[in-house]
Length: 122
Image 1: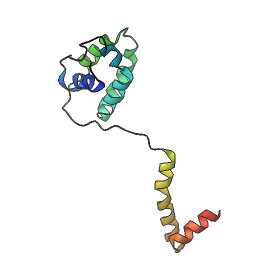
Image 2: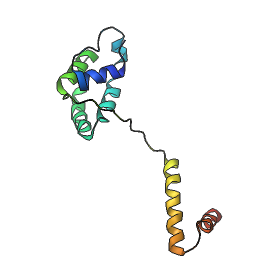
Image 3: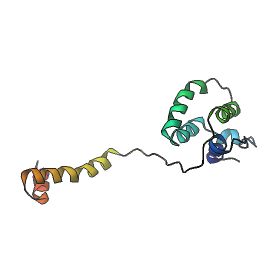
Image 4: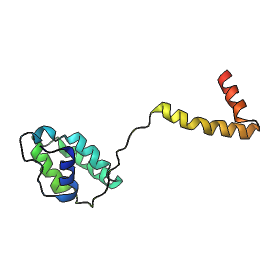
């Protein structure tokens, strides 16, 4: 049974169409995940996938869609695809807090500890 990474290797790198070998591969192929991973390869590939999005609904089965991806998406050199995660809002706030405290302490010429005390009072 093929995995999502086997499909990605065929679509992006090898172009050998080896992924659909069994019936179970039809279940493993997820157009959404393929689109997501290919768009994370590079900004240019994100534009290609965005343009191809309107044609995905034209295919009745996953094998035809897979063959379309192999034929249309250009062959790329191998590289690590970094998974892009969303930064949570509370993590952003924690990262921004020391910057605000530092700026306020420099502006008012008082210590960071005093700024933190003032911020916790209000």
